[in-house]
Image 1 (cartoon, rainbow, N blue to C red):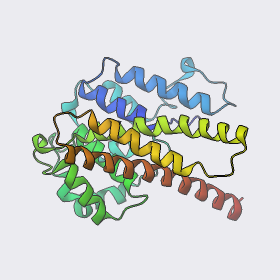
Image 2: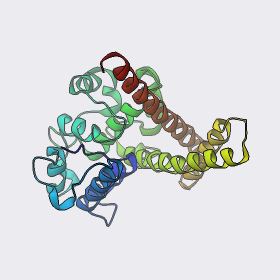
Image 3: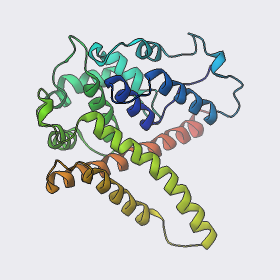
Length: 254
C-alpha cells in the first residue's frame, strides 16, 4: 500500500482552496499530491486509476466531500491531515495536550460548533513545525505577535493560513536553491559552506513576502519576516531530525 504524502506548499494550497481563495479544487490539489507521492516512490506501478477507498486515507475522502470551510475539522481530522505532510509525526494525545494547556490562549475555542476552523487547523500545523526548535513559551510569544486575540481574526497581522502558505512556498523555493548552490559549489570546487549563503537567501525571501503586505507598518512587516525565518529553519531542523530517527532505527532495530 502506498503512503500518501504531500509538501507543505500543497497542504497550504489545500487549506486555501477549502477557504475559497483558489480556483483549484481540493480534489485537484490532492491529485497533485498523489502524483508527487508516486514520483518519490520510484518502485511503484500504481497510477491514479488504481486508487481505491482502501489506499486513500479517510481524511482525504472527508476533505474531498467538504462543501465549505464552515464545516470545520475535528482534532482527529487535523492530526490525520498533519501526518500526510512530509517530516511530520503527530500524535492525537500530544495535540490534545497542546489544545488544553500549551496553546489554549493562542488557538482559542472551536469556531465551527465543536470543530475547529481551517485557520485554527493552520495554527496547529504551524505549532508542529515550530516545535522542532522552540519551546511552547517561545511559540506562544511568537504566535501572539502574529495572531493576537484568537477570538478576533481582524486583529491578526497575517492570517494563520497565509503565514503557513508564505513559509511553505519559501521552503519549496529553498529546496531548489539548495540544489543549485550544491551543484554550483561542486563545479567550482568551493571549500566554503553554502549555509551562510542560503541563510541570507531565506531572510531576503522572507523580507520579500513580508513587504508584499503593504497595509502593514514596516515594523510589523519585520516581525512577520523574522517569524518566517524561524518557521523555515524549524522545518529544516525537523527534516534532519527525521533523518536521524531513520538512521537510529536502522542502526538499532534492523
